[in-house]
Length: 191
Image (cartoon, rainbow, N blue to C red):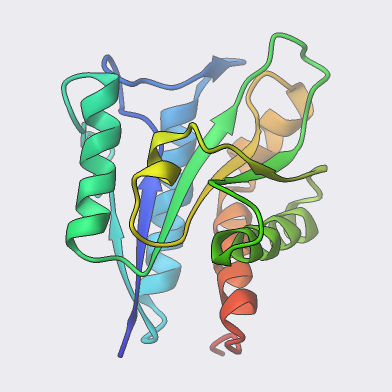
């Protein structure tokens, strides 16, 4: 039986719940593409079923920040997904802050083990700085999902080096998430 993976590309294309911006790039465009690549990779592996929160670049969820987050969680819970992976890009007023981090609702559970594998593979494949797995029980998509959930902050759109990787290495970020999932599940890669 296939493993159901819900890939949530953080933020909407514009307006309600739009994401961070930096160096002329938009979070929602980066998360959309990384999610598409991840969706394609998972679709080509018969061990997985995948659904995307934003199947098209124009897909917009909800009518407010709250309902946008609620709709993403409801889609995953109602499916039901076995794993929830939310993809985001970070921003910081300090342009020197950089790196990848993965958030979980709490440590010492299934999600933190998955988060650790995803983080290690992204760092290995993209050369991003490892900012560790972090606990954040206030994040709605981690708090309200009924399956192990991780929120991946790929890098900082406010950092000039990170943004080059976020724009140019999107497939590698996606493949890192996939490889981390395989490692966590102790599944061999398909040839």
